[in-house]
Length: 176
Image (cartoon, rainbow, N blue to C red; front, side, top):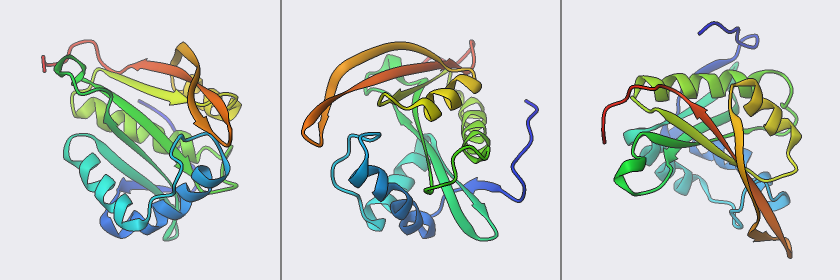
């Protein structure tokens, strides 16, 4: 795959030391938006646990510039049944004000490449609409919207939907 990275942005595997920074990036999404259905911001210790869990079978990557954490992307299990074992659910979060600079695409491409290396055949993502920036990002990476729930998450006193997006990563994968 050929693509260029935003200037001076490094993508690497997340480590426990990144957990507090990831928690700080994520907290405003939890407190102020319905883009995540999580209702209480997790602390650094919880994010460290999540990073370690993701690193076991999937991936958790961070983007940084000059030592500052810009965002993170991770993958996890889509569903627990064995037949879903080659499908990964993905997420990406950027620090406030960094959208539209190519950082999210750079980070997400690295995550998708890692999932291919790990033998995953499909990536899926759930987006709370309306989210035109995230929809454009997913579309630019080859995802297609494949369905929508209209009222599956309740937050801030109202129901929210979830649009589901899918990307084929590889046709031939090992059976689970």
